[in-house]
Every structure is written in C-alpha cells, then in structure tokens.
Amino acid sequence: MSDKPYTPPKVWRPDEVSSGRFSSINRPVAGPTHNRELPVGKHPIQLYSLATPNGVKVTILLEELLAAGHSGAEYDAYLINIMEGDQFGSGFVSVNPNSKIPAMVDHSVSPPVRIFESGAMLLYLAEKFDAFIPKDTAGRAECLSWLFWQMGSAPFLGGGFGHFYAYAPEKYEYAINRYTMEVKRQLDVLDRQLAVSQYIAGDDYTIADMAIWPWYGALVNNKVYEAAEFLQTHTYKNVVRWTQELEQRAAVQRGKMVNRSWGELHEQLRERHDASDFETRTQDKLGTDKNS
Ligand SMILES: N[C@@H](CCC(=O)N[C@@H](CS)C(=O)NCC(=O)O)C(=O)O
Image (cartoon, rainbow, N blue to C red; front, side, top):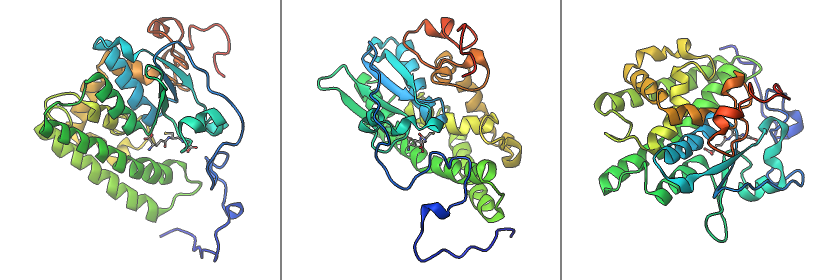
C-alpha cells in the first residue's frame, strides 16, 4: 500500500483539507452563496442542468418523450456551470436545496412544481406522460428496482472509482482497489441481467435504461474516466451490446448534446429552447463565443 499514513485530528476542519480538482466548489455547508434568479423560458418544462451523466438521463427522457409525440414535454434547458458555482445561486437552491444538477420546474401546473434528483425527475416525467414505465405491477416493480439500483450504485462508480482513479491528486492503491472491485461487480450485475433481457427491465425500453446508460454506457464507451481498458469493459459483452443499441437512438444522441459545454463544437448545444436548435444553435454554428 502506498497511502501516506493519516491520523485524523479530534475535530475535522475544512481549512486543513488538501486541494483537489473540485476544491473551488466543495464546501461543508449547504445553502446559497449569492443572489441569482433563474431564467424562465416559454415551455412547460424548465430544466437547469449540465450534460454530465446525471444531467443526460433527463435530457434523453425529454427527447424520447418529444419523439414519441408528447408535446407537453417541450422544454427550455439552461446551462448550469457547476465549476463556476452556478449551483449555489439563490434561484437554483430554491429549486434544488442540494445544489446539484439536474433540477427542473414544471410550469404546466399551478403553482409550478419543482423536482430535483435525476431519479425523481425520471419518475415524475414518466408518470406525468404515462410513458417509458411499465403499467403492470410486476413490470413497474422491476423498472423501479433498476432505477433505484442506479441511484444507489452510481455514486460508487462516480464518487468512488472515478474520483480516486481519475481525479484524486494522488493514486491511492487501497481506494482504487476497493472501488474497482465494486464497479466490476456492478458491471457483472448488469451483464447478467442483459444476458436474459433486451433492455434492463425486460422487453421494453424504460426510464431504467435511461438512468443506467449515461453512466455505465459511457464507461464502456470510454467516455468517462478513461478506464475502459483498466476495467476490461469489453468483456461485459451484453452491456456492450446494449450500450451500442441505445447509442443508435436519435433521441439519445440529442439528449447527450443538451447543456454540453465541452468536447466537439458540433456536439454542444449549450442551451436548448426549440427542437430546431439541434440544427442551428450548436457551438460550431454560433458565430461568436465558440469556446467560452
Ligand atoms: N443524486 C444526484 C446527483 C447529482 C450530482 O451529483 N450532480 C453533480 C454533477 S454530475 C453536481 O451537480 N455537482 C456539483 C456539486 O457537487 O457542487 C442526482 O442523481 O441528481
């Protein structure tokens, strides 16, 4: 083991913490740091987000709902730059007291309803439009079991494995081993399930797929943490098959672009206010401010 010995003090103090990649946004208290109202556009659904895996879950569902003809799912998507601290603005905190993207307000009801936590947002939208969630008791239970599996499991992938493998200022063998063990186990859970069903919760494509794909599909596609080789993700053949199938969906492709502010310019639709924005307002098409 290469970890430096550390003896915790009697009382933990934040000023003794060594800086890391997220030191500018990490803090031990909640609540707003500044006053800033959120913009409100013309559509029923107002989304405040960023195209991380947690954000993409919701934009995939919104694009799938629109593709399926649910016009009530029209939405405005505003970019929340979490590295600049936008999640600590007073308006954002009033929608999500936990200060994390994604967050959403449904203005089609009076008074408007706020929803935070990506899993709650998927469930809210699926129930509102009666879509992408099975109607029968057994099917619904299976779908919700996998939805909540994702909410409980992904923090070990992102906050555990991803943090220590890709972001921590030093490589700690103990932490990397611990979370690699868990993430490989999770991949095997998914692989065994996808060996017996086309989609995660059975024969139908549901919000469970939309919750799990942005994390575990991205891992297989080497889009998060550059860990595909380290984890040997190609050996989880059923997960690879499912990852590729979902990747082909036009709504999935669009959902990945919304609120994206990095990577290829033609894949970045930083704000989305209209379906035509995918054709006309990606960063490569906007004349100014292409890289900011
Ligand atoms: N359980 C939450 C997790 C959301 C989350 O961790 N969001 C991250 C980006 S992926 C974030 O906003 N981080 C900003 C911060 O921690 O200050 C969900 O699924 O909505």
